[in-house]
Length: 132
Image (tube, rainbow, N blue to C red; front, side, top):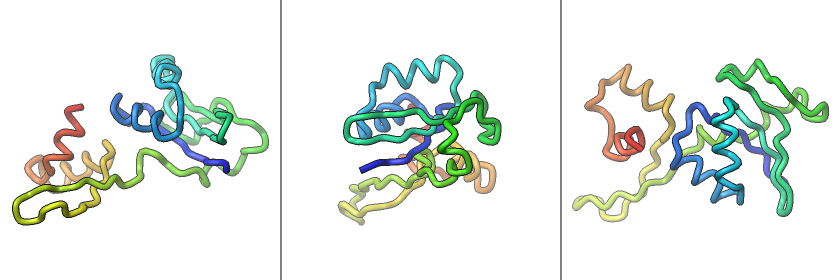
């Protein structure tokens, strides 16, 4: 089964890169090297035995693709955005034992929240995410 996923390395901390690599069976050192080389967004096609980078940018502007395989032109919008997926956090607060809470843990959404509601509106999980 093929998976189509993109990741913006400029908006991803090392813990998220590790999670990404663990989930999709990628070598973290290779992905971190791509990040050090200045790659911003990478579009991956992942199968059980192969990983292809089918497109990439060097800036956060995803309209400025520097490389793309011809067969994927016009299809990059169909890829799942790793940075915008919701993560499920288990809260063990005394009033809500093991209650699952969906929190969108990506830098853009957290900065938008700070801008609109202030730093004090962030949850413990969001603050920990920013610190990692």
